Length: 146
Image (cartoon, rainbow, N blue to C red; front, side, top):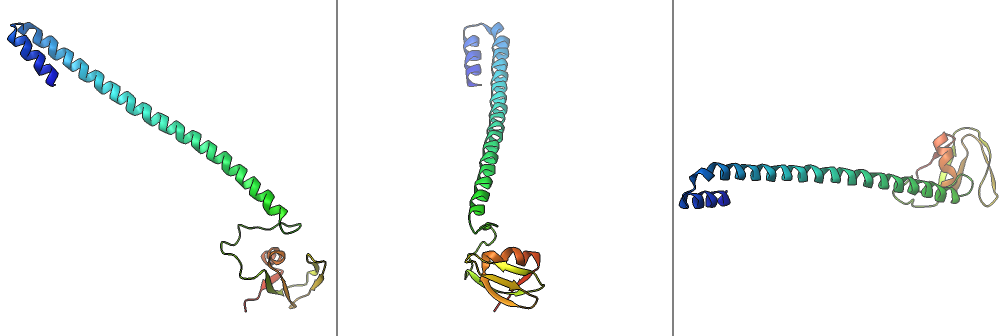
């Protein structure tokens, strides 16, 4: 606006009052162009942001899927045939062995050292936690809290 007033005052002082409407029109065009450029930059910025978020999201999703596969492979490599679910307990267990009670007849159960244990209803055993977890979830064993 300052430039416009300066141009109008200059035209008045030089006696060229017929140029004032042209100066005002030019100033309005410059302001309009300025608003259009600002709007374009605003929209363009947010489209780029959205594209970056989409690309970042895709990269993050690919990374997370690869992480899940690696974690599953690692957990299968631990703890024998069934593997070991390291994501189950957020707090580390106080002991690696737990006392369990058999809720129903299950038959023979072999632990890592080759010992075979007969799981009969109401029998109690002191077994490795990771070997018992699946049987506890199946309802064969019950963890005895003492």
